[in-house]
Length: 152
Image (cartoon, rainbow, N blue to C red; front, side, top):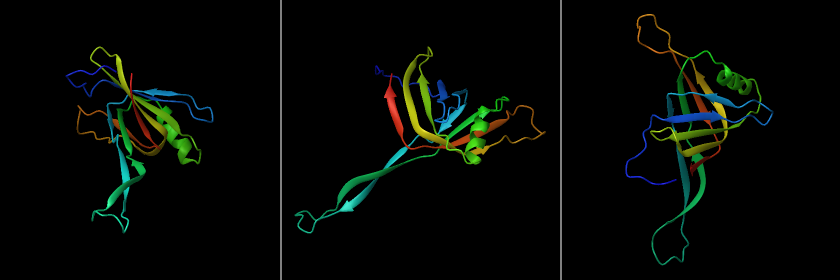
């Protein structure tokens, strides 16, 4: 990936879900918002009694990933909810989720991969008859086992 002086816009991206190990079909879905892309390393404190410096060393150990939230306008497609329902009903159906950032010309510039992502929570739209300009939105919360950041 070539570097540039201006950062990429946060409004051009694609989300794709690979198929499941049990043979579930891939899902391509448009989302208006992706949040929670994060990873944190845990450290252990360690100090030997013979260390000449009176300071605790920080030793990296495990890491934890943040829950990712995807939001989209309700469009009538049931593929995402069907995946959630399968997991809710006891299926083990992890997927690799690819979030691809696009430049202004819609060329792929980098990808974020969520390894073994599974749906944790689905939130349906808030429906209210008082507003005419609101869009019915749904949310999908994902847990995953690792995130990779790859330049294209």
